[in-house]
Image (cartoon, rainbow, N blue to C red; front, side):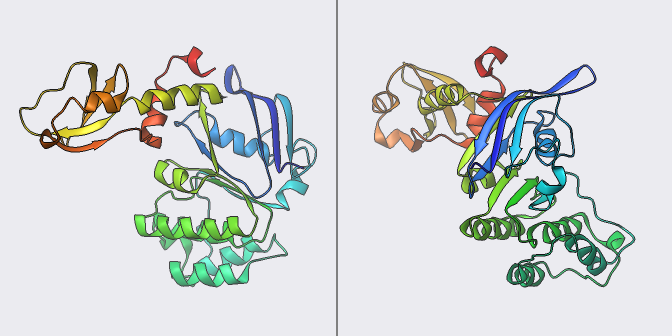
Length: 295
């Protein structure tokens, strides 16, 4: 049985379509990265999976249940972190954790101690005195400590510094190694790229077809990134795509990028990167493709 099965999911808010024909599956123990711009429908998709938002059309099964008719059964086996951190300001941190974790009979005490030691939150203080980063850490504790089958995480690294993001990466790997299923949305593309077993790109309410992603990857493989010595000109057979602030040139070659690069004298090349597809570049290329190329 798949952990999540979605077929032709549609959702509208008034006259505005938010999700359009979304289909995908996620096996138990998988870690899916969901990438897309603001307004693409990522949060709506996650909320639909756990029954917080009713769908207009399509079929959805999460842990063997339809969220339209069995949302409680899904949420008893799922931990959800919303994109907008919601913690009760009038409570102390300890009281909030006691309240939030009280909905889950099984908790990972080892992970509880690990998070508590790393985050070192002043749990005796009122949450209203916490910074944005502290509130996010508190929300993460409430989300990750429950011992459930599925974790649905919408921007879990919001308001966190780099050190804490790296720690969170390790925590998610711990959950993954324990066979947990995870869906992760994040604007920190390097985090998603490092963690996810696979990526889905959601743009304008649609998942980008695999064929479009493959074509975009092939385009990027023909785009070397290089830095040349001063006054050295680009050989023929390539078009300048971008000049980055540090002087790196991104070019697109008409043919084999390695053959094109060999026209340059080694002494004229300070650095070169060929055939590497960065998630940031892939995301930007898909984002700016014509709508018919991604539908």
